[in-house]
Every structure is written in structure tokens, then in C-alpha cells.
Length: 122
Image 1 (cartoon, rainbow, N blue to C red):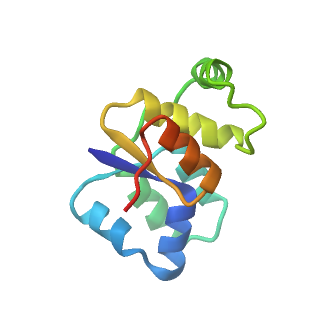
Image 2 (spheres, rainbow, N blue to C red):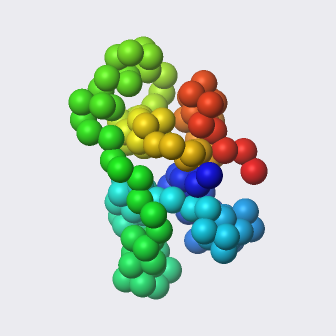
């Protein structure tokens, strides 16, 4: 099993540390998504260049295509739920992956991941 840490988990990690994330990194249970790297790259990162290189070293989930993300939204009526496109694109990637769970502090996204049985709760 791998865990995809959402942007908000990484932000906490960079601000104040996060023991669970550190353990997932140490034991090679962490995956990354290009959208998470993109969201992080517009913020203030510690040792910016090295951090971006390090993030890209984690196993990456295949990004869901526009059509795949849109299909998930339509099929499961995910509009009007307070979720952004990036949230649902990340969720679509996790749902389409084998043995990957999504860890997020976004309550709406965590609830939706739970409905798909892909929510990671440390």
C-alpha cells in the first residue's frame, strides 16, 4: 500500500514537521502526484530547488486525464460538493490506482475519499 499525501499534509510537514509523513517517507510508503508538486511549487518551500527535486523522486501516480476526471464527476454526481478540480483530479488518480490511499486534511475531500474507500487515516 502507498499513501498519497495531499498538499495540506505537505504544508504542515514543511511548517512544523509531521511524524506520520516522516515514517511513510522512511519506509517507502509514500506516493506523489504532479498536481501536488505543482501546488507546492507556488508556495514558499524550504531549500526550494532541492525540495522540488526530492518530491519528484517519489513514485508518481498516473494523472487522471480530463476525460477520466470529468467522467468520475458525472458518474458520481460530484459537482456542487465544495471540491475543486485539482481535488477531484487527484481523487480520480487515487481511485484508478491499485493499493493507494489519499491522506488529506480537507474535510470534504477526505469524506469523498472515504466514500470511495481510499481515505487514509493515520
